[in-house]
Structure formats: C-alpha cells, structure tokens
Length: 130
Length: 221
View 1: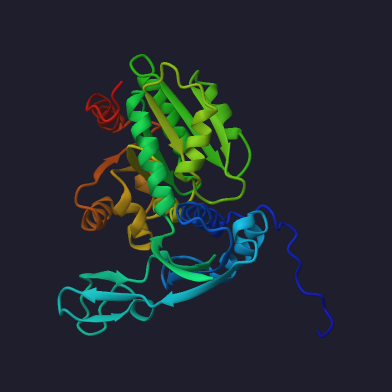
View 2: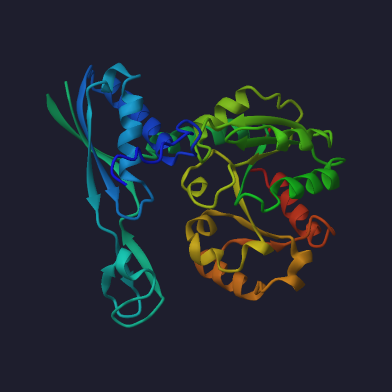
C-alpha cells in the first residue's frame, strides 16, 4: 500500500557485523601509514573488494561512515570500492571461468577439480592524502 | 593531495598483531587454541569434558567470545577452570587485537593451555588470525555431512576437526567416511577426531593430541 512506512529495524545496534571489524582494521592500517608518511588528512581510500570476499558493500560503506567520524585522520575521507571479479581455474581442462555463475564445477568439462584464482580478498589499493 | 599506492590486504594489520601475540604467548609458555564452530555444535560441552578429563595434568583456562551474555563462562567456571567472557560488541568474529585485549584482563598465572571459544559461526572466524597456535574446528553430527562443501575455508584453515555428538550417528543420515574424504580433499594435513563428549567415546585421541601439542614446545616458558 502506498504510504506505508515499511519495516523499521528495532535492533540497529546488536547485529553481528562482519564489516565493523574490517573497517576498524582499515583505519588502524591507515593510521600506521599516516605516521610513516607524515600525513595529517586522508581525502579518499580505494579498496579492491573481491566479488566472493564475503563483504557486503553497503554495510561496509555504512560502517565506514560511522567509524570515520571518530578518527580525525579520515573524517572527510570517501571510501571507493573497486570490485574484482571472481575467477576459478579448472585443473582438469586448464581453463578459467566465472566463479559466481558456475561455482565449483567447471562449465567447460564438468570437473570438480577446480580452485579459486582470484576474487576472495579485500585490500587497500591506494589513498589520497596530504 | 597526493596519491599513495598501498596494495595492502585489509587483514595486514591483524596479521601483524597475531604474530606479536603468538610470540608473546610462546614466551610465557601458554598454548592458545582457537576453537571455532557453528552455534549449538557443543563447544562448551566438549570443553567441559576435556577440562574434567585433563584437569589433574594440565591447567586450562577458557576465553568465551560471544556477542553478549555470560552463560558459557559460568558453566566453565562451575568446573573449577578459570574463564573470561569476552563480548565482541556486535562483531561476528574475534581478531588478534581483541584476543590480546582480553588476555591482558585475564589472570593467566600457572596456566598451560588456553582455549579461545570463538563466536559461533563457520564463516568469518576462519578469515581472522587470532594469534592462536592452533585452530580447531567442530562439526557436530546433526549439522550434516555437507558442511565441508558449504564452508570450505573453515576446513582449510583448521589444524584439527572434531566431529562431535557421534553418539547420535545412528539417528542421522551423516556419512562419516564421506565427510573425512571431503575434508581431506580440502586440507590433506588436517587431523580428524570423531568424539562424543557425552559417552567419552574418542576423547582419548583428542586429549592425546592436546597433550602432544603442549609438549611439542610451540609454547615454551
């Protein structure tokens, strides 16, 4: 029905949040980098987020907005996400395929002898700072 | 503004913390075991049995990590073992920094072996090095034999797999051999111990492994 307010989350504070831990690690790494390079202000942070890293991008951005206000160094820093597609390699036929679409079974030859080549990691690519 | 290339995994800060913590634990002669499993797999029951069986020979402490509540810590203390309840404040896994903070609050004098009971979850605890010497995971029979297919990383990162609640095997379609095969395919060096903390079946092998790790000198005073 138009005009309905929609579900309001009654428990915003108690969710087990994976992204919370990730953001706190990123900020700690940035603090180290800032000290080593005598930086006082970070304007943007670019992350490379693997498609199957298990990270929920929206939650990561929400956590970032929450956390950055507490840290002078990154108070105005924008978080940019570069998504890295996940690719799996098949040892039976030596070909690669899209992980998210086909999972663990090779779409070329049907073998299950496959392993993930890339797309499960999350790293800090670069920052803009002064 | 200048651009600085970092190309650092987000876990880099944690990995550094974990190495420091592990070294410092080793120096104080304390073996830390990170115990991971889904919620309801019987971690606390297994620990209680292990503590009861070994308490004449080994001084054991337990760090109970949870989102909230202290029910697990209370049941461990009822056995006479030292424990501390760690609240992750909403985070779904323990990392090395949190483990270190909890350890700083914990009286570890005379302890030989410390279990970190990680948050009940088979996914992200596997991604974060807690600083423990060994990673042990639990899969209970009622959870099903397909878990290695669904949560491969946890099985890949563990040194030991405990298959618990084997006393209920006759009532479940749980193919023990299939699980062993799937797990060894993911991680050929993992040790697998089927146990029942209720009947005591298989506990000997697990407890012998623990004592072996204690004397192997990973933690040296």
